[in-house]
Length: 307
Image 1 (cartoon, rainbow, N blue to C red):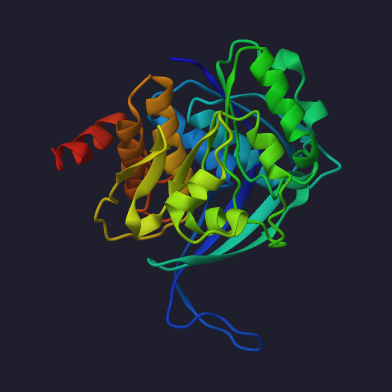
Image 2 (image 1 turned 90 degrees about the vertical axis):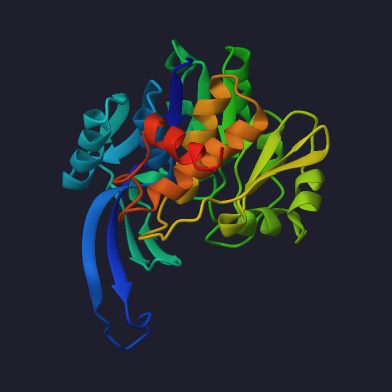
């Protein structure tokens, strides 16, 4: 299958898991467990793809610090090509603190190097040997964001397909400029919160139609309600897999990996959605976004439960 180039952010996740009450100013609460793991939406998607057997390369910037060492080594251990990851002594690698429960989580992030990557750091020569370009965390990658349409256009001219996951906008501005990037994107992966915020439309199917541009397939990740996308303007839905989640961190990024791996193999839409949903569900079995990501065999086994 086509090699996937993931251009994006790298950071560590410090996960405080399980709490009796969510912390408030001036008070201290205790967590049941703590895990340090590889974080960032881009890296979690890349790790998920590699776990499924897809060949992956990663392009990013990190600091020349222990956090950067940790991130690069984690990717390399998963078989991901890290030769395009730049180590910059003038930057600090990003860190996210996740306060997590089985139902949801809250995140506090220090961007550091995350906001330093620019489109000029992705020359056309970086596309050589790859068939697909994926970018996550549109709103966090502040230096990359203005030139992302041009980056996607350059990749398309070199024969790559492209995909984008917006992630949450910490400013909650949800500006319309993302639609320019979508003009050059083949796939777009918002979750239900992001989809409604971007379109100001509460019904997911109507929101999908409002983003239609004649090129981009928008795939809405709806959590417990599964996932939906349009095919010939008709909604195609798959339900979520019933699971008892341990931690939902990165489940949407694992969904992206499952959908992309199936899509790059030419599978039909409903199967891409189902494999994405399976990967998202299986990733929530353990703490952090990458510890329990699915293998292809595990996805197949879960899908057989619906056969």
